[in-house]
Image (cartoon, rainbow, N blue to C red; front, side, top):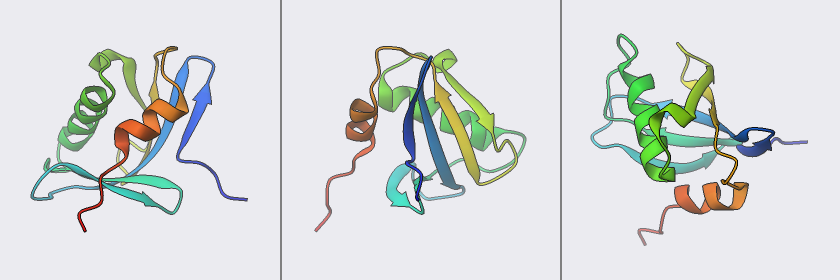
Length: 103
């Protein structure tokens, strides 16, 4: 049974992310292996990619940066975030990260 990249928790939403740092621009690639794949412009040095990820997720979901908490994967490309906002639903998070087709 596969896991969803976006799920509800008591305090908000949990998001499983796979990062590709050092990209030309920050963008959502799509869902790969039950994880939301995001390209980040930031370098994976001194926590810069983690900071950029938190900022990107907060801006995309229109929540304060303090609401986005990195819970697992501090030094890995695979990360688990919790967005602590009880007003968010999995449907609104999926919609926010959905990318229009470029074709």
